[in-house]
Image 1 (spheres, rainbow, N blue to C red):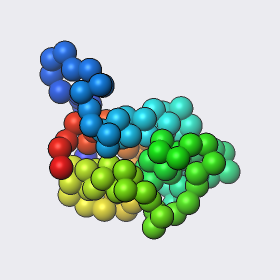
Image 2: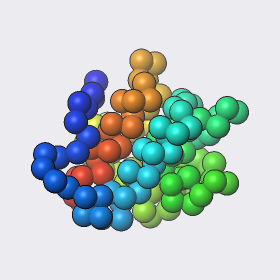
Image 3: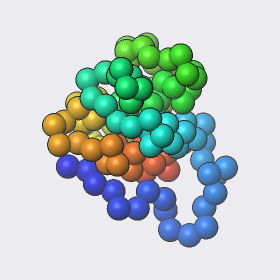
Length: 116
């Protein structure tokens, strides 16, 4: 299980130093913190988001709630960074029975600092 205790690298680092995919991941993490975390749906009836739903809303805005088969290029770059960090499919990881929202948020924030 991936658990991150520190989302940012050590030292004085500004979000402006992130690339496009990194900024998208940070924005997606902010969306999940604001809305809450769900599983098995990109956006549930309470407005909570899964990892993919958070990425979609971060890139496309409020009306986004498509399946991960329709992710845009920026989404895929961000998604693949999370896959690299976790070493497994992020959808299955997000939907694991014991997975929590804070764990998903932490993974998105950590993946934001990875490079391709």
